[in-house]
Image (tube, rainbow, N blue to C red):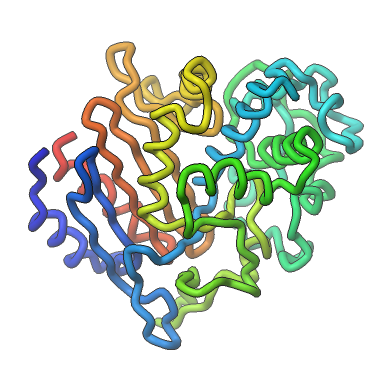
Amino acid sequence: MRINRDKIISLIDEMQSPEPFSGVLSIADANGTILELCRGDAIRSESIPNRIDTRFQMASGCKIFTGLAICQLIEEGKLTFETRLSECVDADFPNFSPDITLHHLLTHTSGITSYFEEDVNPSYEAIWQDYPAYRVRRPADFLPLFQNKPMKFPPGERFDYNDAGFILLGLAVEKAAGIPFAQYIQKNIFDRSGMEDSGYFALDCLPKGTASAYIPNGDGTWRTNIFAVPAVGAPDGGAFTAAPDMQRFWRALVSGELLGPKMTERMLHPHVQADSPTTHYGYGVWLDRSGGQTRRLFVVGSDPGVALRSEYWIEEGLVVTMLGNTGEALWHLYPRIENALGL
């Protein structure tokens, strides 16, 4: 397909408010790369620039890996979509409904109260003032933040985006697979997809080629997000990836390399309507639908200093990925870039 490269480059370079874009943009179709663009610094204190293979934090964009892991384990017969929470997670939830299933957790319809309720307190960073982020290095470390909270509504009643539900899915993966969550994802998704630059890295022990994420201080200076997000990414968010890896992932997923045909179809089915009549949710993945058909699959992620949007356009075979290591510019840019693509 023909893309107005100059227009897209101009949109990014003209971005100044609320901040200049810092990150990467990758556009590719089945024939290869169409456009790659890098701006800003991965490490500001050393003036190390972002590169197309720089690893960025994903925030909630990695929920798709958790959903995929559950589908793999169901395909292997170790779980079912109707497996109840009490059957697959070894923890006490005194106020949770006994009817919560993996399907409810996968589709954000469980009705549990999350550890982060954005409509109550929109600051994700504030969570870690009383429960230090450096203590959160495995899925079970999140449990004290929500396991005693009340239900919000009965399971299956409606869609309500929920990070805690994906923490529980990660714990279900660990019990069913018998290995730590991050190890399972590395072996069964990253390695199988050829995603050599992706992983669940500790913020205090990052590998070479990894971008720090930056939060503005309000006086023209910036700080990293090391105290604003958990020390190690979890089933609900926080993995690292690079733009070429997301292209590899989408191709592996839709081509059936990670799941059989029937399970791939079920994972990518519009199980529940989400934020608008055209937006639906599968298992860990968003779907944009029009005329009864899914036009694109996408994931999004937003944390302090982190922004991600990665999409697979089904008819066009197009993968568009933007990764940012500041928190605002990407959200202002992406609609304009999408418009320039003419999709």
